Amino acid sequence: MDIFDAVFLGIVQGLTEFLPVSSSGHLEIAKAILGDNSIPEESLMVTVVLHFATALSTIVVFRKDVAEIFRGLFAFKWNEETKFSLKIIISMVPAALVGLFFEEELESLFGGNLTFVGFMLLITAVLLWLADKAKSTGKPVSYVDGFVIGVSQAIAILPGISRSGATISTSVLLGNDKTRAARFSFLMVVPLIFGKIAKDVMSGDLMETTVSTVPLFAGFVAAFIAGFAACTWMIDLVRKSKLSYFAVYCFIVGIIAITYEYAYA
Image (cartoon, rainbow, N blue to C red; front, top):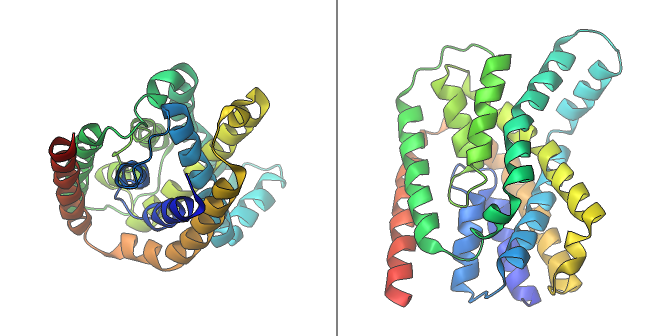
């Protein structure tokens, strides 16, 4: 993988992370188009690094929210910030368990299987379409909601299932307010990504790849900049626009991915 490919993938990751269109699915499609023949472990590692970059951009964009949460936690009181943090922790459990016990199986799915990605995008389209028809009751995210949304996040580890699409759709289908659903969705993934990076660093997994450091760094920077720019103006788009628009987009891209695989297999 050269610097151009890494920067291109970083931009794709940054732009698609904050829209319900599956950034991992788009990364797999982009890697296939670029002719990336990396083994699954290397492909997954590139994906993790780019997600790490957008996680940092999420923290920067939501810095006031993050600071408020930490202030509330260090007050050592049973306040709203403590309750919100507990819900975040609950939402992390399903994805953490899946990542812990099914890591090898997941790695095998990040090898450019566009047919699988295409069908997962079709599932994302269905989720978004159903969520678009649901009525928001304006209720906040509850502890049970947090766990159910966490299950959706665990399923969204699969390339082609949009993490934000699955979590926001699930939250909206549970009757939660779209603004609260979006905020919860974007913040709940940050601890998981940092946890994944910490695990890989301690286990030495990141050192076992043959991908050059320079392209990885270039992709990281591109993903961070694109993610920061996208987050500042696309989050509002996610909250206000009809999810059916994204459903149609995911459906079209899913069909294209499946067709591309069969045409060039």
